[in-house]
Amino acid sequence: MAVFLIRRLLAGILLVILVASATYILLNYTGSDVARNIVGETATPEQALAKAAELGLDRPLGSRYFDWLGTTLSGDLGKSWFNNVPVSTTLLNGLPVTLSIIFGALVLSALVSVILGSLAAVRAGWFDKTVQASAVLADSIPGFLVALVLAMVVAVNLGWLPATGFVPFQRSAVEWLRSITLPSVALAFGATAATTLQLRGSMLDVLKLDYVRTLRSRGLSDRRVVFKHVLRNAAPPAVTVLSLQFIGLVGGAVIVEKVFGLRGIGSIATSAAVQGDAPVVLGVVIVMVLIVVVVNLIADLAYGWLNPKVRAE
Image (cartoon, rainbow, N blue to C red; front, side, top):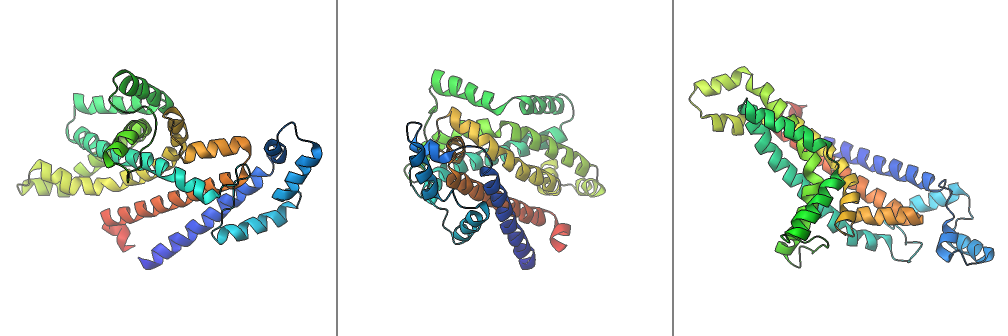
């Protein structure tokens, strides 16, 4: 297990470096005059050139890249080109918002998928068909539309939950939960559909195995057979799908944060990309890839815990 963890961590670090390096190079070929954007359109060409020299943009790309790589590997993500605020500070302010709604969406997706997927697998007929049709329909609805409907109906018209804003958990756990409920539901909508269908299919395959009939012949109740034995053996493929959905949730968080007025990583990345604020964009990329690597590692460990054959290998 230790060797497996070390190998995955090294592979994850290499992935972060490669993705961040590719992003760094691409940012230098966007055609945007960052120095001119910072000093403003009314500034003279000399002022724009002076700002470019201050940022090091007049140096060769290779020299700038290796300087950036060295400082980044030392843990220094630099400062924003536009407000001179450390990138780490900006990310620490936005990260709790994004992680809250993403992991809220993951928990919600997992719970709903287990309930609906299990019931659809053991209850053939109208209920199974309804779950399948609903999942397909939910997967086809854009996330931003779900977010807009929830904001208008639940928040504005009914007033049950706040339409905008984020309350940190340390300030109030109840208000934190209220502030992330609608964004998390909007974000989990499509992911829940895919995971439900995957879990349903896996459970149908497991229910056909001989050991299930043996357990039932010994007098075990259907509930115990399904939730203690069948669900555990059917869960690994669903865990893999859920971990893959996490990447989609990261992208979907950008739209959801905009709809609900949240200043998370998605909003920060969008603003920085429009401005051409390379240090902030690179910081966001590094942090999000690191999170994806960690989540995939956790999914692999969960897969091994659920499947003894994988753990043995």
